[in-house]
Amino acid sequence: MAIYEHLQELHGLPAFSFPFEDTEEELAELPAPEAVAWRVGVDAYESEEPWQDAFARFTRAVDTTRVRALIVGAWDEPFENGPDAVIAALLAARDRLPALRALFVGDMVSEECEISWITQGSVAPLLEGFPGLEEFGVRGGAGLLFPAVRHERLRSLTVEAGGLPAAVVRGVAESELPALERLDLWLGTSEYGGDATAADLGPFLTGERLPSLTHLALRNSEIQDAVAAAVASAPVVARLEVLDLSMGVLTDEGAAALLAGRSLTHLRKLDLHHHYLSEEMETRIRQALEPAGVETDLDRDHAEEHVEDGVTIWRYISVSE
Image (tube, rainbow, N blue to C red; front, side, top):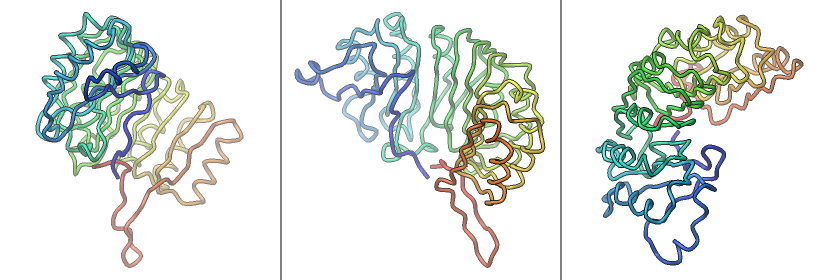
């Protein structure tokens, strides 16, 4: 499957797309700078305006000193061009964005650019350049670089990909993020560069790093059973409120390992939606957790499998292209 809708909100603020043209009528209807998460993007195909020019229009039309959340949409031909010019423009304007607390880079739907075709780059300069950020997200794994960083205030980190390079997972794992409460990694499939293994997740699971973590999402993975087995015995589980292993190829094998591991009855929510579990296993999970007040999401969603002659040939993650 693919992504068909842009972000609807960021930092608790509704998303609002800055207009492609500065008409008097459109500018008159702009919301208050602090009231929305501003989405700035251009036509992904042969845009007549570079992203940085659209951003310059935005900085002229909006009091950026009051902007709290910013969403970077499509830049020109993102299937070929990385966001270097985008990142440079953002960093050049950082003194004009003192209130910025949330930033998402690459909010594109499939008709603009499939998630696995989005060309990314190194996003570390953004975290270094905006020390006041509390939320940061990026979509697209091709060319993505995430060397280890230190950030004192970041509370939420999301990396969405159809295939997440192991080097990115390791870079996040080696980062010093003492305030991080929410980590969401879409590991993806090897077909699109997702070569991380369950062993690469070790630093997230020991409980020694990310001391503030309460929401852990390791999802959208073709190795979801191995991820579940690794999480099952992980010390970090004891301090989680939300555990999210959704959107991947989770079968009864992985779910059984999860139930046989550390107790999950303290969780507020266990999210396993888009799965390949039997009805019997779904019942086991509900009976084990729901009496303790744990919310369980066991919606099979659009999980489809290709079966020939009674043998399962293919199972699919939720978002790959």
